[in-house]
Image (cartoon, rainbow, N blue to C red; front, top):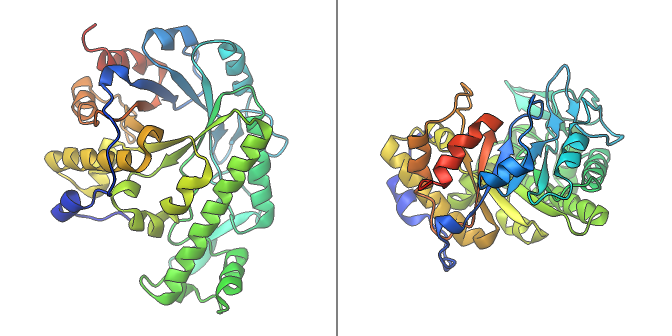
Length: 360
């Protein structure tokens, strides 16, 4: 989906208008850790995180494993792998470091109910996929109930996974096609709906973006009903700040309608190795793209921005060297108040400590 080359004009002119927030020194930042697993033999204790300069722990509470997937808390809606969240809430109760839950919305490899599954267009035909169909009212109700029950757990916040999106070739279930006909008064024609730039395609993009926004609004309302004090963060694809129209076309993510929904923090997935590989950038252009992306994000969200830094290689799972991390950390604009290291293991804490405490 992403472009294969980087146009220099994009880097020069694509920053969004707006006044930059007042500068925040790196020393004054809050640093968080998002743990990629929850089956560690030794869990990172709150006191250890606090001593390492980390102000928040984010725990994964879902699995999309095809054979043994499920949730890590009891919801009464989906299978439970084991009660990892209850163990962690006990350890973090009353501690200075808040505990957040990282939760998926619709992509679950173990989802088998054909009535709930979305359909995608692939190789000239439609096929079911293991994602909840956001056009199905029953699936929407399940999502709302799921997040309401999660928000009722003794946690301080929820991070919503980036699967809250309808990709370019998705949403083509009977419910989705019927929604197109209902809103546009036209017969659902898959080929036309997917033909880039066509009237059908623009109408279909509008409908999908509206449904993603509606789903997020439902999640926020459900969470706040269960716990008015809970904080909500949203994972955001890195394309959004610089190329919002592309993000809308690729993910049905419309920042103009999502921004007012009451999200506390926008977690920008500024994963530098992923960005460099997908955009096919040389190292110099990669650093420039990283910086310009963060500058635009800061203009968009100000103090609600959290920059997510990649601390492990997604392909090899190997830790990224400190020098490489520092090169990109130093590119983060001074106005950024929060940085989250993702998706980390407890053994990554020492290198994170060195990164954020270079003088110690």
